[in-house]
Length: 46
Image (cartoon, rainbow, N blue to C red):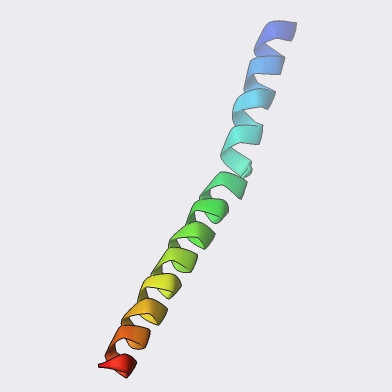
């Protein structure tokens, strides 16, 4: 029974913990921003 409680607690913490998702969104946004900035720099020089 104790093992079941530990497993349920582990599953619950994984479902509630959104840090990996948020970290992925932050990385995606930063890469998108870098690409936009580099495109603007290229269009500015030509």
